[in-house]
Length: 416
Image 1 (tube, one colour):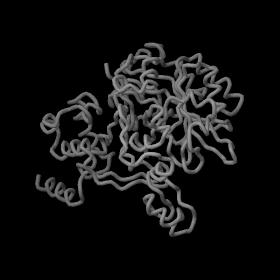
Image 2 (cartoon, one colour; image 1 turned 120 degrees about the horizontal axis):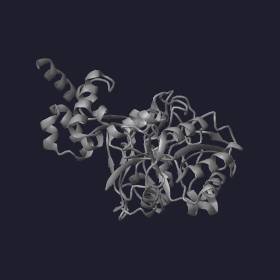
Image 3 (spheres, helix red, strand yellow; image 1 turned 180 degrees about the vertical axis):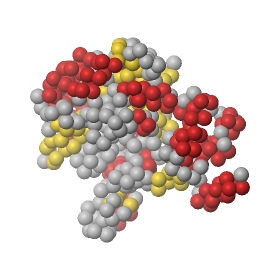
Image 4 (tube, helix red, strand yellow; image 1 turned 90 degrees about the vertical axis):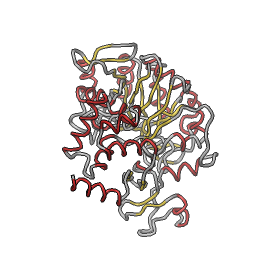
């Protein structure tokens, strides 16, 4: 049985998160999206862990479900993200790590060790003055079956390979413990095609998760498995990199990520790696160093040319969230009432969002959805888009319809 898993999210106890990021709303959103397994996020936070214990009960090995709830079809997997800020090899390092744990016992052992190092109550994603290698040791001591994953591995400020505070390889970061790193998380600004140009991107599995700070953002990136529905089945599918078990990842268009290109947000300067090189990586407006994005960093670390394809690699598909497609088709914002109505109609007709985005045949879409919405979904599947890359914390813009087409759509609605 194939299923979709989003293993890195955040609760209401993390900074800059929605107050609705509770277990009930997460489960409800996961069902609407078509996600079967979702990470709990933030298991290091005492109050969130208390809610997990009160509201969830064991299901399959290493998975949990809601107690006495209509959303008890959804499975939760214990997960957390930790921010390590420390000095190593003459440089300040800032590395985010995602940990997947097989049991509540493992979680409590990890939390007990980390509580001696920093304040776990301050943030759902705790900031610790802890070497990433030491965090890995603590995790493995709690339970050897934990999966330890460098998060959004290419982002400039908090990725293991980030241009601002990262390393040039997994081994440089973890030394002799590198053998315990089985996966990297792609993040919103990079995809597997980019990361596999780097040696470490071919050595380990590449997983994708939403890093959602609200239930509505669940599944913007995710993983699709045909594995046993339990913790061991999921982790072994990841470690094996077997495309018969780990079917594919669901990716953002990487250009839409906040750190794809180089630039300066304050100066409204966005540059490709080639353009940055002409300016010696210095902002042509203010003269300060540019924030070098993911595309630039990939070029710096890669030993394969752009377009390289790895044999028998886990595939990936790039998607645009359904509400964004509907909003553009209707030429309005994603929060508009008519977008919600159009979204609800499609979910009612086709069960969940991923079913609409991935599986429903074009003929069925055209029969059940307004013509411009059906056309938007089809174009998104085919990657026929207008793309403006993100840079220095500014999200990129993905457009499905040209400006001329949008004017035509407006005229059509006026006539109707």
